[in-house]
Length: 440
Image (tube, rainbow, N blue to C red; front, side, top):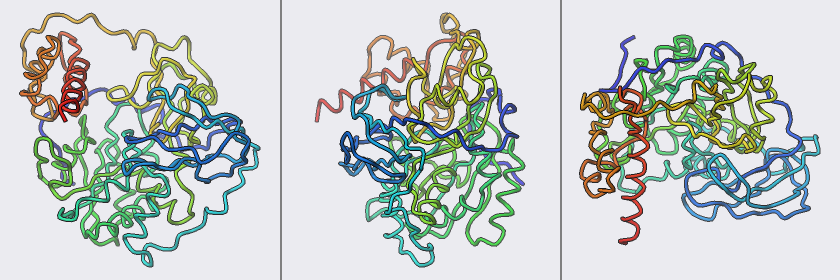
């Protein structure tokens, strides 16, 4: 099978061996869950319950108050003990604290929705919206928004991201091996929503067993192709994945729909299948718990709202003093200042590094080697955007297309002087966006 790819990119060590052969196991039931009302890109939800209320699994407890938002559901049955602002992996947010009764009583609204052959695209979209499904690759963008393009937009292709190019993470890999049918069912549901006949599932060639499993699963499916991708970071980034699969280039400042494509994660597709087949909204997900700082790395099916430290304890606890705890992978994950935060819909993994691995090297002067330009998958000049950002010259940084940076971190990874390129570019992007908002 021909390997497809994009220009640029880097080759960080995979570090997936600790968990790539380990089957997903169900995590222990949490006694208390802390469910944030904002787990997605967009507006936070409004609480639908109050302290003292009894709730059930799958019950909606947070209502989306804006178009770019996604409802929140309870992952356990029990009693609401508290509603208050708390620390979460993405910052402070209002959380609904629920003490589990251990019964996992399912809410009456959780019922099968029928088969996609009988449902209209509009009905499937409503199921996706009400199930609170967001992108499970880590970005947590509300899925129903992706499938609501402007009326004059011609969408002709769906791409599922099975690349899982972040080092350490193996959650998507295991899902493709253990439940490929749900991925394909969810993909077919997506295709029906926007009435497209063509779809790709892109998988890096370091997951040959997953490629074989998915090929077998789609052998009788019309219009769905499995694409083997060259193992390279960031192969799973939207624009790079689109180019690899279709040779289409998303224009500067544009979205995938500008070239007729919608991209989703394989986990998102499986969540859609669950919502249709069982009626259960998004209340749990697969996450990889790994890194040299974890005694027994695992792939776990975790309930939203379970504390990181409880999940880590189920993996034997810390292997010595942790140097850094990251939600997600080492390239684009979010470093945490505490493990006393809950897992959310976007928790694709919990990575714990040793103090030696976490230590940041002392940056040296830029030697103008051009490696960051050579490997930038967005065809930018990170060296100049960073330099202008560090001098607070944000207008110049914008001229160098700072807003097109996909924040993959490849430039920082390759830099021989260990310059904090990504950090300074992120700051520049925030300043440029803030200025644009003020000028409106």
